[in-house]
Length: 362
Image (cartoon, rainbow, N blue to C red; front, side, top):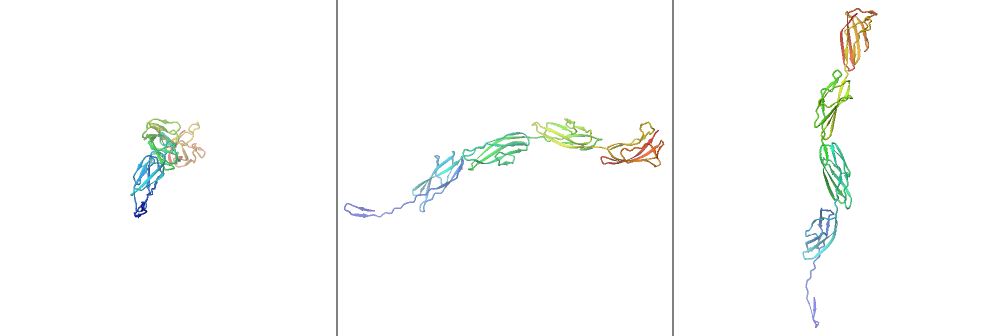
């Protein structure tokens, strides 16, 4: 510095002046959802020889912070002007203003309900909304170990119980909301129908079958025996089948919720082959009992031999409807006792042999 007086006399003084650098404030922020935390990352710096000693944040909603890397939660959707002031150790300061965006959360809403006997098939109608942007994702939790990412799913609830259903929706900005409907699905328990029979296969000679009700968790029941007419409301009924065949015996059980369970088992009534052989006949021309023949039911094949007492073969046939008229070689046999042998095969596949005596009586 040079000083000059009125006489034009001057003097010079030298002094040292140091200029300090200003800080350069800068930051980055995350795009946040309403009521979730926005993270601010401080990127400020200053030239060497100085340091930044303090920060002043203004979040644009009348909130402030002195932290280096603060978090802040906004309670309103919008775009906020964020100012960051950086102060050096020499008191130099600088301010920058940037924007931060707070996105809306969606509102999760759905409708469905169901109650009844399992399994229950329910369709869920989703009607969620968002004030800005679009909803792009759905996650359903049905409380039975199953989930779905469909917007409008259908789900089958099998096991008895009360089920909560939870829906989480996600927007295109990653904001989400969750809604849980408690006990929205009620699956009632069903009875368990079961029975046993003393036999599942018998023949027409013993066609009576005894049934025992082994069902559980029921209040009412009904038996249907499968032969076209017979039903029963007896707990442990006995039923006689009137004909051969394969029958579907059915037990229907119902509980207090009106839930039903049914069980079906097959009962087979087999045909029974029988043979009756008379011990005498009277071939006297009166039209009564004139021939000897075996009477049979359900036979598939018969072969018959008739002998006299000395073993002479008098008559044989190999048909179901054959007979002997008491003659041998055109002559009437005398009143006597004769021997027969019969081999037969029933329609049930059983082979039998009969040997006996038949008498001619005049």
